[in-house]
Length: 111
Length: 114
Image (cartoon, rainbow over all chains, first blue to last red; front, side):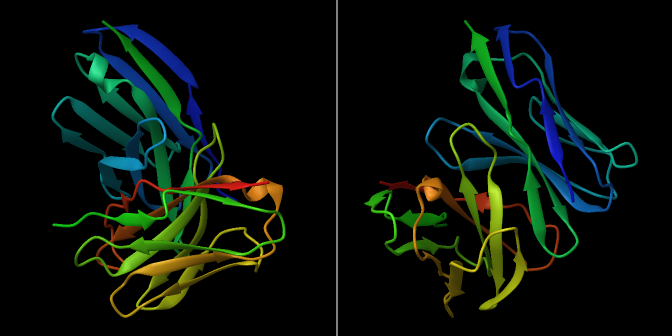
């Protein structure tokens, strides 16, 4: 069974700092990996989707990488801002149309 | 373009009752999936519907069932509610049904079982 782990569970950084969030998964047979942002009490907002054949995707200050063979993905956030404060979740899609989420990293950016 | 909408936003039920949650997919999206998110946890995949058929299911008992309608909207039904069913229930839509399409989520229904 696929297991998705996110480390650290919580992270606090000063505004302007660059940071990296980590996501690992146990089974490399995935279709894609997606990063989401979740604000308290809200649904998830899609940030980046990386297909299994891709190595990275970029959107603005965000860059996500995927190393399928080692079961790892990272989300890099450049020049962090207080508005980036949220919980960040990664999810993998696997064969059989199943989705597995990590428990998330709670990010606080201090002004 | 209309996003994913879910109703109701909040619901309180008693143990043993039944509940129906509703989801309207984003315009043009033909695939809907449902998730249960307990407090402080990541979402757990319940099932996915594509063209009115269930085509993927997570580790949830049969008392969790669903429907998808011709307009791609969907319902999640939970029978014999248990206290542990208290959670945020999220719906997501995507397009096309079988490809590498991002999931677009609604804001969820907060279910409390007492």
